[in-house]
Length: 295
Ligand SMILES: C[S@@+](CC[C@H](N)C(=O)[O-])C[C@H]1O[C@@H](n2cnc3c(N)ncnc32)[C@H](O)[C@@H]1O
Image 1 (cartoon, rainbow, N blue to C red):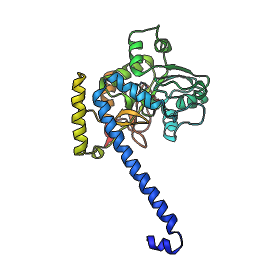
Image 2: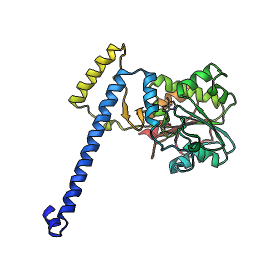
Image 3: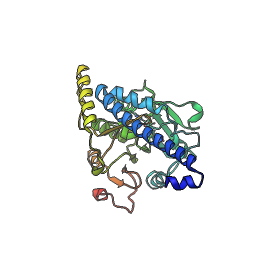
Image 4: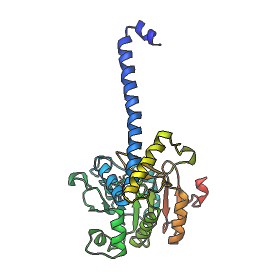
């Protein structure tokens, strides 16, 4: 193959391109291993609050959720929102709103939109005619539970919403199942008569990676460091780490059946192309809304 290219007088260019591709591919593989190692180490030696800060720090370096009109809804989101949301000018809350990608698109459709995120963008990247507050899920749960009107999040939620959107996997950054339940309880308190929409990361069991021996050794070392800080990392958390998204967890559709039952709401599940659920107070639709869709 290589000689054949040489015969055409392209041997030098071909060899240079091969070298470039090999270096880039090796770099990418090393980068992924480094991300995994750093994630394992940070996961073990940090508290829940510190992990949230790490995730926020990672998101503050990315700009894929901007609300200045350069990013908009995906096709699956358009259809999902059209089916499940009450019509405009309904009042929508977007927790984990990023820099306002969904907020801008919903505002353009005539909705009244409020959102919050721990990462605040510059004003020119945020959507116009929407209300944005800086804050995270824990602060929101606490502010609503305590009816804390001294907090901007408490004031934001004083007036009921018609729907809550936990969109494009913001929920996957909540590593604790207890907090995820509290988030849904809070969403239900904020939109007592409206739907709660959530999309999240989900992976089939067969894709769970097998840990190499060197990774296991690093995790053991990280656990020893964690004990020095008085921490006991939970070995069952199926987390991933990347420098663009920080920490995230894969969720299961079954978890939402339990949450919906606790809230006394119907659950509508959709899996393609992105796993998502709607916890209803919404008009029933033709598709199945049972756990059968998981299979
Ligand atoms: C993939 S982005 C989605 C942003 C936005 N919903 C969208 O669809 O464009 C995930 C968002 O979750 C936010 N996030 C991460 N941890 C959070 C936390 N503890 N509380 C609230 N938001 C969080 C991130 O800052 C990020 O903006």
